[in-house]
Length: 292
Ligand code: ADP
Ligand code: MG
Image 1 (cartoon, rainbow, N blue to C red):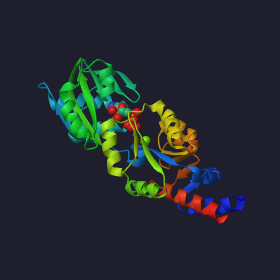
Image 2: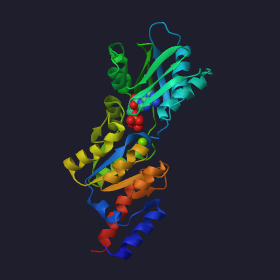
Image 3: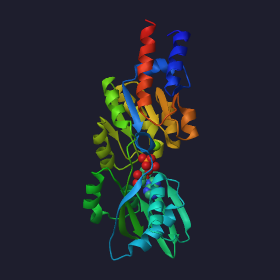
Image 4: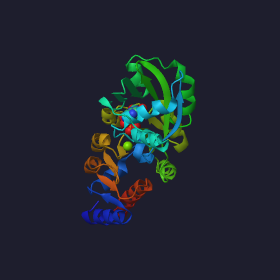
């Protein structure tokens, strides 16, 4: 494409809230055969709510939730915020916490009121040696509804299951349909539970799910998808999306995402709507057609 047609194309995109940080992305975008999207904060709003909470073994529900929320109050993860919010809605006082530790992509642990707590994904509690068999049926049912199950261990015993659920962004369903019309394979990359991720992917009509991806595993996911399908566009919002945005042939950041994601991206969406990505593809194709 000529410099002028690129300028016209990026100008038109900007009018629609799609910022091309690099003009050449307008050309590279056309070669994409697969588009991979981060789930939390990209396809979904990234503001989960606590939906279910079940305690076993005669433990006081509110006392336990107060302790769990107190621990989570030290974490910045959106899941943590959902739990703190739920505890506050029940007007629970959060006790003091010591020895807090967060394990990225896994969960959190701390001590409070003389008790030791571990809270997180099944893989986290399993790694610590806990048996989750008692929750298996409940977890499967809730995961199939697109809810994310978390487990709570108290003083070495599993005592509760909590689920959180996030809402899809308004434009996500339409965007996936449009990507298919453009002939793209659509993939979702997430640290979430496989079963939960698949339920959400089903709702969206997504072709390929890469679930239980650790925060540092997104680059590998991009490489795997590229090997399988060819040129890849990656869309994300978070700190842990930055390396994948840089690795992809074209990286697209959701504008309300973190600065580091925006800096690593070739294209930035000024509005929180994935239909902007569809516009970017359309403009890319139109620009390159005009110069033929
Ligand atoms: P995602 O961005 O898809 O949520 P993460 O890698 O941040 O992926 O987290 C993966 C999983 O690790 C979460 O789904 C959750 O099960 C667990 N996890 C992470 N942080 C926390 C936390 N603060 N409290 C409980 N569970 C957590
Ligand atoms: Mg995200």
